[in-house]
View 1 (cartoon, helix red, strand yellow):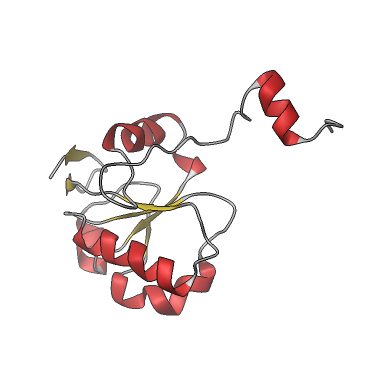
View 2 (view 1 turned 120 degrees about the horizontal axis):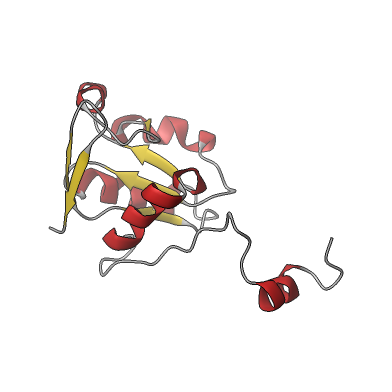
Length: 134
């Protein structure tokens, strides 16, 4: 335990190794694409990744760490979302993930680290993906 607390620790030693630094994108609530890719490559478990597409779309291909909560079921499952790590919503275009972001803002405003990927994403069955800016 560091007697002066975490802010003093961070100043002296830097952020904790598992702390994720999320850089926001240009759209309100979006995560920067470069930052998102870096998190997926280096520390994917540092975020709670939610794929809000329909189950058949998810089954056809998804980010390997993503959980599937379709946007039309999100309200019912909102209390299952963690408060201890950033939540990032994804889909194929940013439309449903953006809708999920705003829904969470309205229904659970106490969650502050919530983002969505504003990008076009192509998924393949083997876990590969291509992300490009809209």
